[in-house]
Structure formats: structure tokens, C-alpha cells
Length: 214
Image 1 (cartoon, rainbow, N blue to C red):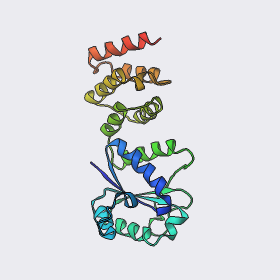
Image 2: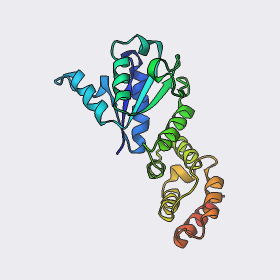
Image 3: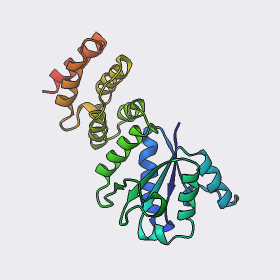
Image 4: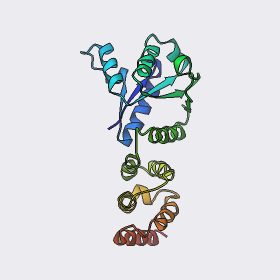
């Protein structure tokens, strides 16, 4: 399991908590200092420990981040440890030693598209993989969540036999997936492309389900 360290000003606790909650749905763990440090521990030691253990360092860049006493120090430690750095731009651009990094623009009013971009970037950085996205797709818990996860799957270039059969099985078993707006034609096209390696019984169930919903 990959580990993500979310560096932020305490004034951006809400944004940090939202990002933590969302990325953890994809099989990773995220550390947010103001949420995750137990009161009985020295928080400086806990921060150092989690910086050492993390695979990815996310910096939530706001004017408050720049004015914090600790975020620049956390950033410097992460750079020194050679961590993967992902700046998330809220209202300021990357600066100082991370000024050379391309920031991911985050829309705090509508974070859905920003989250998709972050998940794709985490896959690109190998902090997440295709199986993580498939697992999230299998566990889709609302129609909108299923649409969101399917959109992420559409960005995958190639699925293995095991992976595509998991996707078909989830599409058959999870009503939040097959009954979501617009998912059926997208999935049917995808399954047609992989029909030669999909379990015939699963494909039969999908076709039956598709026919019954019309």
C-alpha cells in the first residue's frame, strides 16, 4: 500500500481531509497531521516518521501554506528524502525549491475533476495502479461514484484478462454501476473490445442484463 503525506496549513484542514478521504478509496493511505497525530505523541516526531515512510508528498499550496511555520520545513525534508512531490495549487504557484514542479490545479468549489486528475497523476507516478482503480470501481456506492470511477477506467490503455473480467463481474453485480446514467453503452463497447478474453458466462449475464434494462 502506498503512503501519501498531505502537507497543509491547519487553516486548510477541510481540503486536506477531503483529499485524504478520496485517495484512500483507491487503496492508499494518507497522513494528515492535524487529524492523524495522537495527542499523546510528540507531533514533530510523528511528522518526521511519516515523512520518512511516505511515497508521495502532496503540498496544498495556499497563502496560508506559505505563511505556516512548518510546511516549508516539511517540504524541504520531503525533497531531501527524494520523495515524489505533487504540488496542489489552490491560490499560489509552487515556489522555492519546488518552484520547478508542475502544480495540479484544484477547484475547491467542484473538486470532482481535480480528484480525477490527481488519481491519474498518482497512477502515472506509480503510487496507485490499475488494480486500485478497478477495486474502487467494484465498490462504487452511488450512481455518480460509479460514473466517476468508470471515467477513470476509460483512461486505462490496456486491461489483463483478470482485470477485464473483474470489471464485467462488478458491472453485473453492482446496480450502482449498471444503472448509472450513461454507463451501459460505454461498458458494452469496452466489453466488445475484450470479448475474446471475457468469461462467456459473465458476458452472457451482461448481455441479458443489458437487454432487460431496455
